[in-house]
Length: 625
Image (cartoon, rainbow, N blue to C red; front, side, top):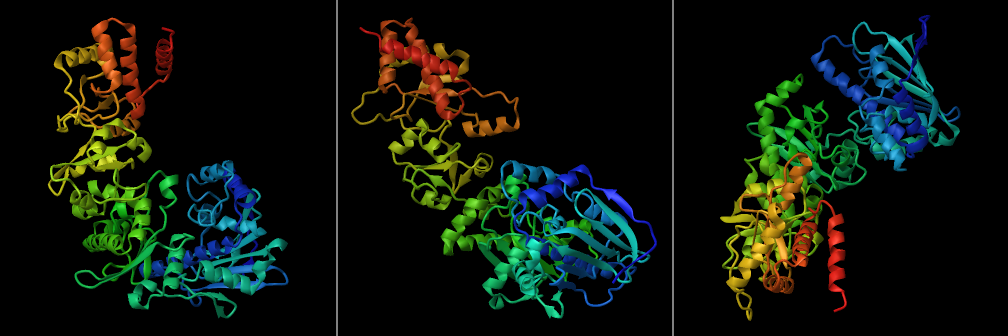
């Protein structure tokens, strides 16, 4: 037991944001009290890992008094809970930094937003946002932390707090390195003074901690490096629990991959595909910069989230990679530039893409689940990983005019069912399937049974045009005016006479003026009077919208208006022009048709004039004759 010295007790006040954070955790958001034990065990294991690593690279550390382990002591009668480790310990500065301030920027704002939305704080988030230790205040009113840094010349310290606004630090006599946390449980949480309950929580959350966890003399966890085992010896239950432990995910993985490589480089890996996209994709708007598998060297963790093991578009893959071809004291900079790491990254990328291909063939439903969650991230690789570009193209999946909602087609399947005269692969991009199918630009293709890929994923407009062609078939947006549409008229219809068409198009150009690049006869429309398309060198409308979102001042490119002279409305307008070209209703009708096309595209900036003009036209149409 540590002894108190005659040194003065220093009192410190939590910063304002720390007070708010503690209040949110304890009283407002957190409803899974058992997680406190997981977090304390996780912190203890982290301290032991740091001590193990530092002892291999720093000769000036205190040796542990005994086994590297975590010890839990319970007193059922007094409701006393103690957890102790022989890890790296903390200095006074580290105590203040680790237990007196918010560990990660943005944490308070994130939790406040959860409170405003009246959501509970998921037990799987608390550790990720750097506030794990403070969860202990749910089950107790006062916490004592006794610690001594493993650095030579360090002193024993005692940190105490009720979590109400202040904490104290004083010097104590402590002979061994490491940290001891003790507290008395609140009456309503006395279950955690029971051995069976503690064992239950350890088995659930911490069974694969890489150090033994003892409750008295009994070891509660199974310390094993699963990634070192042959694939044939892996038990699915163990693998799933291991995944939950390293990923903080509460769901089983969608699938896993065991890798063992010997040769120019040697390493073993156990990789996991999550069921769902990680929280960061929503909370941090797609950033995965700090993700990646854990890097081990000779079973010693070197980096918890090693970015350099996988390309950015695959960093949602969780797991462990263990090699003997790096030194234990490898630095971050050496890892980044190491030819060993570059080779491991290359091999892992190849194996993961092969894994995805295997899922697509052998377990299509599982692949569909994966693709819906991570397809948008994987597509980014098309513009960044040119070595594996062809493999990534084969993994692409699209909805189309010949698939049901939520069903996919590959480019290979699309080409296989192309008609003999079709020379191009057509796609249409927009905000969603319903909007895409309602677009008049699809009518030509639907009428002739030509399949069109429907691209509703925002990333598609950046990556799909970069493919250019597949199997010697160019990829083209159906909005482009340079598509070579057939000039054949529908059976039974006469071509529109030139003397009627020329004045009609001229009147449209006059009425729309500078708003439009040109007005031309349409050969793609079947049942709609007009549509808007991009010019030969213009980007399609979805790409233009995305560019506007990123560059607010980007001027809108003028579009081409296509007019269907066989449509009854256009025929009626043609007759009105012949009868009296100065009739004001003509210009109003033309403007209404143009803005209606903009509305369908999602590009009508103001609906006020559109609605007012619509009312005027309805009034004119309903006058008593």
